[in-house]
Amino acid sequence: MAEITRKWYKEMSVYQIWTRSLCDSNGDGIGDLPGVYSKLDYIQSLGVDGIWFSPIYPTPNADYGYDISDYKNINPEFGTLDDFKKILDSAHKRGMKVFMDLVVNHTSDEHEWFKESMKSKDNPYHDYYFWRDGKKKGGKKPPNNWLSIFEGKAWEYNKDLDQYYLHVFAKKQPDLNMDNPKVREEVKSIMRFWLDMGVDGFREDVITFISKKEGLPNGFPIPIACGIEHYKHGPHLEEYLDEFRQVLNEYDCFAVGEGPMTSLKDAVNFCSEGPGQKLDMLISFDHMNADCFMADWIKIPFSLRKLKKTFDRWQTQMYGKGWNSLYIENHDHARIIERYGNINYRVESAKMLATMYMLQCGTPFIYQGQEIGMTNLKFDSINEYKDVMTFNNFRLFKMLGFNEERFLKLSAKVNRENARTPVQWNSSKNAGFTTADEPWFKINPNYTEINVEAAEKDENSILNYYRKLIKFRKENEIVIYGNFKQYYKNSGKLFVYERNYKGQKLLVINSFSDKIVKFNAPDGYDMSKGELVISNYPVRGQINNCFELRPYESRVYLFK
Image 1 (tube, rainbow, N blue to C red):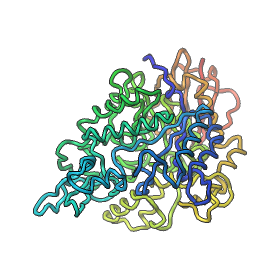
Image 2 (image 1 turned 90 degrees about the vertical axis):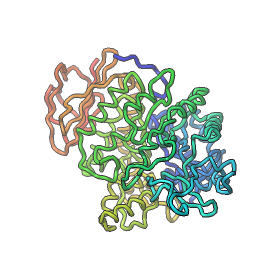
Image 3 (image 1 turned 45 degrees about the horizontal axis):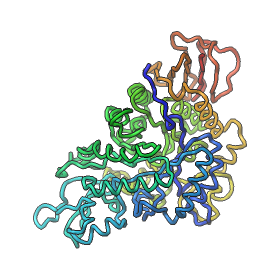
Image 4 (image 1 turned 45 degrees about the vertical axis):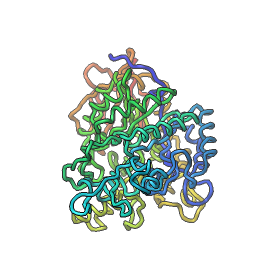
């Protein structure tokens, strides 16, 4: 068995906060930092060891915080730096780490750097971004054929400069030119600002996009993200990650990088421990493609075999080399129950999915509301949405022949805005999220049944099940450091795997079926010798090597 290096970040469970939708303290309908502070007791009660803030910097909200206008301050909608420091100090006193989102592939077009860059071609900040002359007669054609991921063409024309700037996301998110050493120094200054304050590390947004191929050549003609092959792992990416790592190494902190379309081979390279390590963990999207093709919006039927194959690859090939980040929900994906589970078995499938991912090898991340089984929200009109990505997809799907009704039906299943509805705290008006007449975003009407207050009163709730899982992980090193072996790989109904560490074995059994499924113990197992330590249904009587699993049943046995 490979030797696993012990690190504090490997033993954590992390709670992700999307501040705008967590809790509103001042009645303006928008979640804020004092609201977060008021919920620290609750977050601590989950047993988590850290909290990760999605961006809380000043922003014009073109992409709800991922378009930053000032990296060293707090969004006034959310509060002040003093409010943040209060949370930081209180979290540390509770034994919890605090992580920030580091978004440096792009800024807001309202950032001072970009405002300066627009003043003239010889302005010192002009080269902070990708400004290029147009092509063809009169320079009226964009510099290349790239398309943005969020909003039309990847180039926006500025008539005063008679040049275009690059934005691989929204128009108001111009890409930083990381090839400019001054930009990299700015990034390091940002990192040190927060680390010196006491922040414990970063989640680095689309960090694998920060290096673009020299010359910015045309991309392969596809209807969205054309050109991505020239920046999803650019020529200087590893060099720049090494440079940023030198700053991280000055502190006792960690960095998890978001890497869309990053291969497992690259993840092992980035995260392998020792000299040359670039990241501590990578956020992969592979396991989120079990019901879609490449992107959430291109739906295909859910495939358990595809999901298992992905987890198996990442678990076995990262083990002993790097470290996995584990998640099934975050701010960029629809709620998981209606994707990989079953809304008709909401409680059972939510618990099963939690067991399935949290007992693998890696650091688990729990997204706000996930722990009470929040679900997706259906809208009656496209105008009820808020997100630039939604409107871009609406434009694309209209070109494919979708009318609004058909688009809304698809959107209800896949839209990332499903994860951004306000957290449901209780059954009072606006789910206890705000005292305002209208919250910033629509609240799911099922808040009267699905809310924290109700879950607290039910010992068998999803919430209390998450607490049990987190506690069990914390108390059993086999869950943290054990290796991974999958059984019944070809089953379309069962996901069964073993964790093995220092003479102990953990057998994790998960049914992905709404029917009764027969389970036969893997060769070499005597189930009567195992201790049932976790289950999402009551289990009574003698345990034999063959038994029936109920819909979305999950059982975990420990063998000593």
